[in-house]
Structure formats: structure tokens, C-alpha cells
Length: 380
Image 1 (cartoon, rainbow, N blue to C red):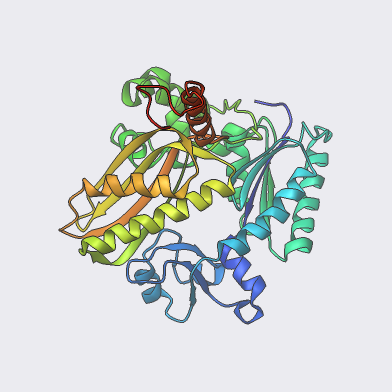
Image 2: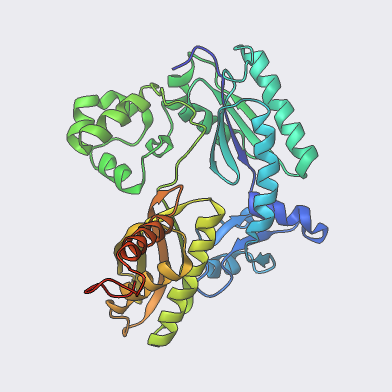
């Protein structure tokens, strides 16, 4: 834990919906919902005008339509969001060399590494200037949290929403955290929260009071010890400039279950192509191809195949994905398909294979005399 609130967390407000409103003046001030717009679609982001009606992220679009039938329902335009995100991230980069993007609209910044004076007044001034610069450059608003740790900075930005700034003074952390739900702690999802609830633990204060030994007993050594540290305000996680992705993947949920085998194979090929496009855009290659199949009853399975070396060749990935789907029974109906590549690298292996083949051909050629290949040696 630092002695000054020099970790900044930025979270853009209703980012996708706000970007659409900024791009289309006719949508400003009106409820906007961005996400899947089909019968099985899910809300990605709802504008604050839509949230008044109870629409929330991760809600089924069908439910959102019932709550707010007059909203504009839009499919995501990621090229637009990426362009705006690049502008925002460049502004963050001007504050410090240590910027840790979490998504297109969210990031941590280490202001100490940027040479900002470690006082509350100085970091608050930086945060307010950042908010003004973002609005001037993009027309959008962002909420800023400032604290002495990543966990507290993120909590502060949540408290600041929408379009605000909250600074947590060092020494006041436990007073602020105590009454909060245990779900406010990073890494506490529904399953962990339910385990704690059954043990009578529902707030951050109760989590700390339970003690490390009890949390380890309930959750295991690593999770229990980590949770105890965070619940008692101890968070020394650094801002990491490079977040190395472990995989690249794409998936689609279908409005109607797929039962036609050729359609399933066609969709897998299309997803493989998109996956490779994303892989190449990141300047990466990968060694393991993975497919994901979710059936009509929501049961989900994955299959994987590890190649000889990393590749970004769409034909190679498509062939591997096709082999994998061939081994899966899809006759009962498929709700979702996905293709991913893991085991990422910054190079491709095909060049090495080509070099090996060339060397082998050269070795074969060395045995040729003036009349042709040496006896017993076939053509390369």
C-alpha cells in the first residue's frame, strides 16, 4: 500500500452507448442499448437514459425491450470504439509510462511513475485535467478513481460514476471498505460470495474479521490468503504496462439452434477466419487451436489440437478447427460456436518448416551426379 493516492483508475461512462450518441446527434439524450439485437442477444452497454428503466449490461435483450421498448437498439461497432479508445489511451500515456489497459474503456495509470507530485491536491488536479481532456478530444465522459492501491482506485471510480472523480485518502481505506459487499473485492464472484454468505460473511469488514485461517479453510490457501489481504486493505499489485494475452478467440450465439451439419462446418470456418484476423491484428501467432460448442441445453464442451509450431495461417487454423468439429455430435442443435488460438508467440513456425524442407532438398541434391539423382535416391 502506498502512502499517497497515486494510482488512477479510469472507466469511461456507458462507453459503447455514449460513443453511439456522440456519433449520431439524433440519439443524444435518448435511451440507447448496444448489444445483440436478436432473440438471444445480450446487452453489452446501456446508456444512462436506458438504465432509468432498469436496463443493465448482461441482461437479455428481449428483457431490455420489455423494460424500455422505445430505446434505440444497436449492434456494436468495434471499429468506432477502438478509434475512440486509442485517443483515450494516448491521453493516459501522456500522464505516465505505466498504463495498464483492462479493456477498450478502462485502464490503470501509475501517476508516481509519471513524476506527479505524491500529494492529494496534485493527483486530484491531474485527474480533473484528464477528464476535461477526454471530453474535449472525444465528447465522452469518464469517471476517475484515485487511491493508494489498484483495488481502491477501481472502487473509487465506481463511486464516482457517472462523470465524476473520487479520491480515497490514505488511512481512510478500512472505514470506506468495511460496510461494502464482499463482491466489491476483486476476484469475488457469485460462487465465492455464496460460499462466504453460507459462513455468515457478507461485507468486507466481516471478511477481514473472519481471519486468514478461516478464509483459507473456506476457499483454499491461495484464494483465501489473497482475499484476506485485500479485505484488510493490503494490495501491493503494481500497474503493469504490458498485459500479455494468453489466447485470441471469437464466438457467435445463434438466434436459432443450428442442426444442419454443413451450416455448422461453414460457421466454424468463418469463425476460424475471424480469429486469425484478430490474431494477425495483434501481431501474434499461436500453436493450439480450440473450438467451443454450446448445445441447445446450454451444455458446453471444448476440443483442442496442438500444432507443430505457432501459426497465423488461416488455412492451417481452419483445417484444425474442421478436424475438431468433425469429432463433435451436433445433431441435437448448437446454440453457440467459438474458435480460439492459444499458446501465443510473436513469430510463426512455417518459415522454420520451409527452411528444413529446403535443407532436406539441398541434401538430396548433393547426391546428384551429372546424369541425375544418385542410385537409390528419389526426386526431392
